[in-house]
Length: 360
Ligand SMILES: Cc1ncc(COP(=O)(O)O)c(C=O)c1O
Image (cartoon, rainbow, N blue to C red; front, side, top):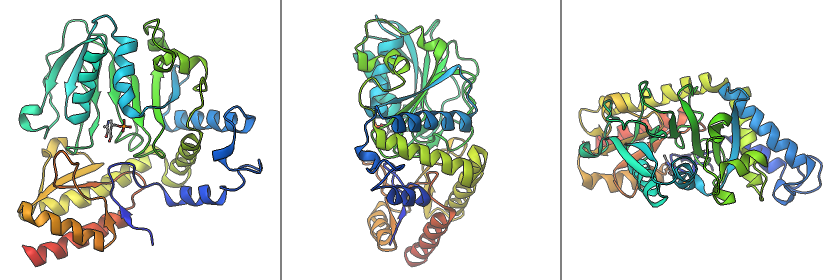
């Protein structure tokens, strides 16, 4: 039996995609072997990787001024690659701190020899909102933000329009959950293991013009140019994850109605759950400020902390898994990623209603 999977990542994948992976496992595209066993230098894999890039480009409406890169090392390696390439030799770069992952990116920039400047932070407010006032430095190389904060359940309602430099961002936990306006961005990245594919792949979108301004002398695997010049095949890429990403992109295009369709479904899921939380008379309490709530990660607490353990255990018994909050904050977190259907949210809300009736 398949459960309703609310994991923060690695996360639920679309069932039709998993079924196709299973069906093709022994013989992928008539090669007589699985995708796991194919060489990344084969013409079949090369064609699949190119098609995957084009599918993504078309979903996002990106022109050829953008390159799609397949990197490894998780989203966390991007925390280092960015400053190594774009803020070497103590160059100033601005960071907006909205939680754990942005904090890590800021700290990594220091280690990598940049001079990161904190342009805003919601730390004093326990990261429960997205800041709207910034003290940017004069001429930063870039302005960094984390678009969706997986741990605290906040998301940028809109991005800063008056930043003094190009925006760059970590979109890991909301990538492809809605159409993206990348006008003010030059680089965005996303670890695949939430909305895209299994772990092991990090998607990087980079403006070619921006890539040309990257520092020279960066070690090959940390240098964006290596990926650009070798079409992400300088070394062995995570072929299986790229293949699954391609299937997910096709599912989004053909079965969901693209990113606009995805956004509508994600909105419906989030509205249903936030609506139930808000209508519970305080038995359930959302932790993020209303204007900063994430539709992807819904974080909440129960009337008392003592109720949270039985709540989570009972949920598991009902086939609702992965609802524990991030280990750094506790509480409850329902991650409503793309592949999670509305029926999962209905099942969760039903369970929450019963639990409240028994314990309220
Ligand atoms: C927003 C965000 N950024 C970065 C990371 C770290 O990703 P990875 O484990 O791929 O390095 C995570 C992981 O959950 C995340 O949610």
